[in-house]
Image (tube, rainbow, N blue to C red; front, side, top):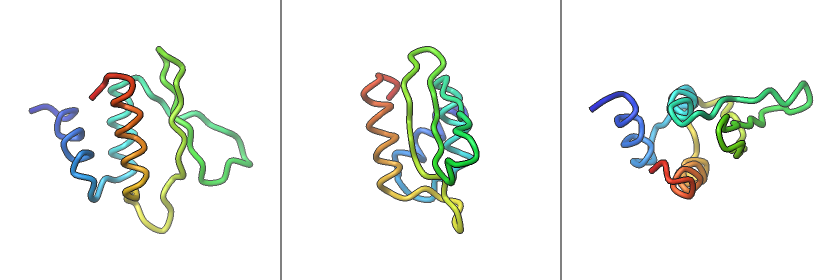
Length: 84
């Protein structure tokens, strides 16, 4: 099992999935963080280079792990696009 498959399985487990792991996983699907400027605060947008679809979420702070609702949001988006 490769790194991509391991990250997918960990994401589906919905526990202790870090922001760095999310960035790494989304890059496998051609999603890259987009700088929204100084006023974006903790909001992060990932844009797919091929489809131009977007994933918006708040970057975790004071903790490094994503919350369960964020993981569900990401899973739903990736399923809708046929990646999972």
